[in-house]
Length: 600
Image (cartoon, rainbow, N blue to C red):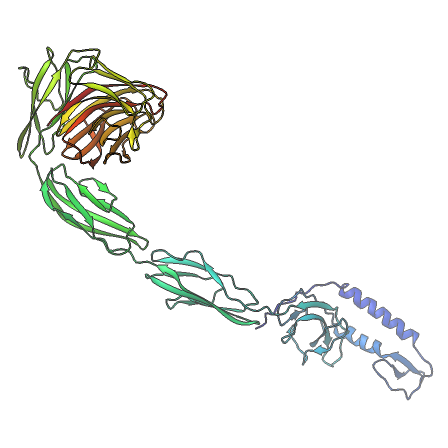
C-alpha cells in the first residue's frame, strides 16, 4: 500500500490583516472607479459583471460583484490557506492547512502542471487535512479553496508541489548478530530488505513470529531453526528464507570412569572421559585439591582416604557436571626406598644424599658404609674421612611397612683430570677440540659442535659405562652464552656414534630445561620442554628398563617430573655429562657439581 505523509503548515504569505487591508482597499478603489450613473438596467449580474442597485435619488449605481463577495468574506472572515509539501516517495499525498475564520468547508485542487488543476477532491470537506487517492509517479501541484456556508469560495491558496517516485520492486533480506550459541540465545534480527515496504512478517522457526522491522528474539530450546522474512509494499511482496540459519546446540552430558577405583598411594588411577554430546573442554576435580583439563588423566593420590571426583564437560551448547561421591578409595602403600648422591662442589669428601623413595614414607634411616652413626634425616649430607668406595643403605619406613635401598658411592680426592671410571671424547664433527676436567667436586667441560639435535650430534661428552638401570644427577652451575640453544646437562647414550639413540636433560641459556631424546639410530630428535630457569639448576635422568624419565629441581631435594619416553636401548650404555656450543666455531665452557651416577 502507498505510504502517505502530512504536509506541514507554512505561512509564506503576508499577515492576514495586511492581506485583508490590501484587498479591501483594492475593492473600494474598484467600486469607486466603476460607478455608473446610467447603467443598463437590463444587464444581468454575473461573476465578472457589475451588479445594479437603485440609490436614494432613483439612480442605479453599479457595484462590482467582486466587491460584494469581498465584503461578504470580510464580514464572515476571509479564508486564507497556506500549503507546503516536501518531496514524496509514495503513491498518496496528505495535505494539511490551518482553519480559516468564517470558512465552513474546503476543496483541494491538483494537477501535473502549475495552475492547471485537472483533479479535485470529490466532495467539500470540513477537515483541514486531505489524503489523495493513489497517484502515479510524477510531479503534482496543489492548491486549496475555502467556502462559506452560502457556498461562496475564496481564491486559490498558495500553490505547492511534490514529486511521487515510482514504486521500487521489493527484495526481502535480513541478517542476525548471532547465529549460534547455547540456550537461551538472544538474537537481534535486522531487515536489509529494499523497496518501499509497509509491512514485515517474521517467522523464527520455532513458532515465534513478529511484525517489527528489526525484532529481537530469544531461542529458549536447543535446535536448528529456519528463519524467514516476508515484506509487503506498493511494489508487491517478497520473502527471504534461510534454512537452518540459527543453531542452538545442546549441552553435553558429562560422564567418566576410573581404572582402578581403589588402590594405594603408589597406584596410578586412569580417569577416562565418557561424556556424550559435543565436548570441547574438560575440567576434572579429583577431591584432593588437584585438578586437570585433559580428556584422560593418569593420577596418583599421596594421602590415604576416600575421594569424590567430578568432571565438568563443556561444549558449544554449554556445560554439564558429573560427580561421583567417594569414588576413589586409597590406602597407604608400602614404601619403595630409593636415593641419589653427589659430592659437594667444594669438597669431594662431602656428599649430599637425596631421598627419592615412593609410597607413604614417614621415617628414614641412612647407613653411610664407613661405620659412622646412621642419620634419620630425609636428605642428609655426610663427610667421609678418606677416599674410597662405600656401600650406602637407606631404609624407608611407613604405615604399610619398610623397604631398603643399597648403592655404592665412590669418594675421591682426585683433582685435575677426570677420576676413574670417567672418560671424555668429542662426539661427531666439532669445529674445535673439547676437553673435560675435575677438581674439588666440580666437573668442567669445554666443547664446540653444531648441536645435540637432528639426526647427528656434535658435542663434548664426559662419561662412564652404565649397565642396566641407573640414575644420573648433576647441578649445572654455569654455562657460557655462545648461542641461546647452547646446552649442558646429563645424558644416557647407546654408543659414541654421532647418530646414536640417547636421552638427556639439559639446560639452555634462554629456554631453560629441555628433555631431548632420539628414539631410533639416525632418527630425528624430539623434545619435551621443562621450566624456563637459569643456572644453578639441578637435572636428573633415570633409566628403568627402556623407560627414560627426566626431572628438574631448584634444590636437589624436590624434583619436578618433565616427562618420560620409551627408547629401546642396549643394556650396556654410556652415562655422563655433555656440553655443546651450538656455534661450531666457538668453545663453550660449562661447570657442573653434585654429580652422581648410581645403579639401583
